[in-house]
Image (cartoon, rainbow, N blue to C red):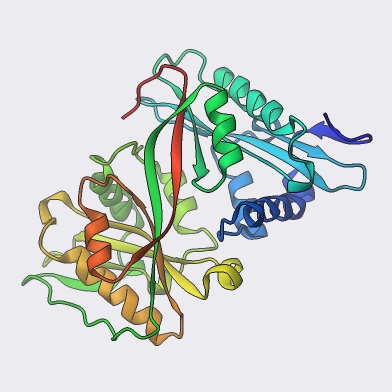
Length: 324
């Protein structure tokens, strides 16, 4: 299965990160996925608080140091719905040899270890819709599709500048950094508590989220009421590594509105400000990811504001488990 001289071992982030990024990006290009990874993003993923990198990862390394394939059992420590996301990639030059199947089975076995004692735990995977080989592999190993997601883009070329619609009386926009981080974490968990598959973020995970290298805090904002309490927010991000494949875009990374304030135009206002600021700063457009079955009707809102579908991905679940 492995070429002569190749070895299997756990990932060593400080040694392997560049080779892993090269592998992941080569595979993305091979299947037509324009999303690229970066050393910074990969390192943050491999050193997060929920990963035991020595036990949750496996890399196949050729004799010359090239990463042939790798696998990652990415846990979500939710006491009510614990789950492990199975991730794996094989370099295009080494596909078709059974390496991907072996890595997938390894992550499934590791997921069973992580979820031991948690009868409600599930193993899941998410694949780019155009990666036919990966999707067939998951299905042949007992996975079934349960949810669809999409990335959408709004390109500024030949579009009028966005003018923010007015806010209801008593509400105003402030820079994201002016609001207490813990208050915003609580708001975030409230906003998404009724969304499919959501798990509340603790203080450590939230700090990792807002301190990620991709986050652009200066472009992130919150809406507060008369008391200064936040009722909505947006976190903007940028991924410069995608410039050649997608353009110079700013991502609407996270957008949340308190359930008592939905339907009042707060999300529209924040998106319009996000688009206007990105345009003023010379970016080419905006992008975002969305649950295609979002209960808040987010897809329709984004389309109304000029976003169009770029591509999609499919969430799979293994075995007979139910998940919602």
